[in-house]
Image 1 (cartoon, one colour):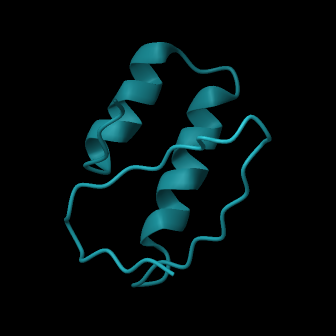
Image 2: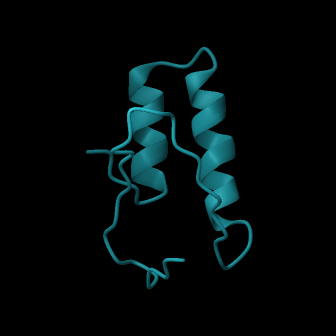
Image 3: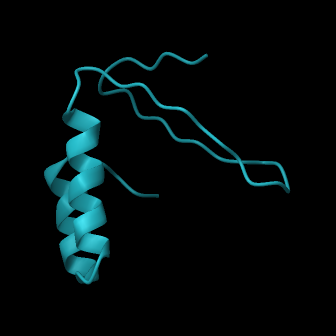
Length: 63
């Protein structure tokens, strides 16, 4: 179990040669879900610029 305070920078990496699995529970409800819905829509036929705009709008940084 890992608890990350709101706004704290963090990231994840699978270091195994096998695919990893992760269960994420985030609060408040709806914030992370909104990001996932927006980035999924941008990745489904959208441009790279649209995807970058989603990351910026949700204050998410992709490294």
